[in-house]
Length: 328
Image (cartoon, rainbow, N blue to C red; front, side, top):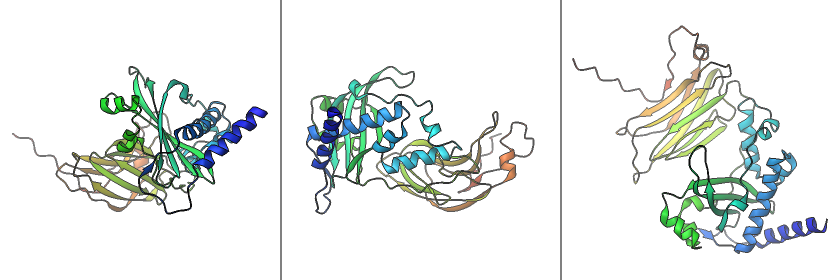
């Protein structure tokens, strides 16, 4: 009991040391006391990790940001799962910090968020183990620090950054955005309802940033990447809406891009069907917009391999280019 009380006392004291001052938020980043920051980070992460490993919802909620809790809940519900039961079922064991070397922690200018960086050898999938940066993100909620999410990226292509991390040059944390804390705490998304249709949005948008909202509730951000997200609240038969802005980064290569919305199969053997797309060549100007598209019964029926009708076309945000006639 004494040990538990002492641990709680140290955590509260450490959190108090990083409370925001009653002044205007500062721009940029700040470097907190590293001993205090590390104690916060490892106490909160350990609580979160134990909650995950033991399927202890109370411990998990106590250490997890409200934003992350709602995002996880919406992700499970949007795939017609049962939250929290399906979240804890078959979860892989989160990494132990004992396998990593602590580098340092960076705070946001307003001291409302932290990013703690560790490095260590990690084997991802079937690839050979290699050294990765493991960045833990935290936010301050109601006077308590909460874990939000982690980032992991390979240092093989960043040899100079890797060398500076190992010699304790903390200034590199300010220079590379992968090590940065949130500028502002993530907003808590609205709770979604159980979907009629499970949906995913796919984006392949090199050199571009996209802010998107689907059916007024599912918010997505893509930045110079290729990724698929589950649509919060899913899609529905009949009318659906999508709106998005596209910003092109002229400093980066921006070849062809593609956005696609898919209804995902729930019956074994069926395949996804695309119901909306936005496909552009490299020379085209990427513009966003607001669109209403319809998911028909034919679209749903075409997901079955036994479907024999004509294949319904997705809604095209921009007309597809006609393929040139083959030279004779």
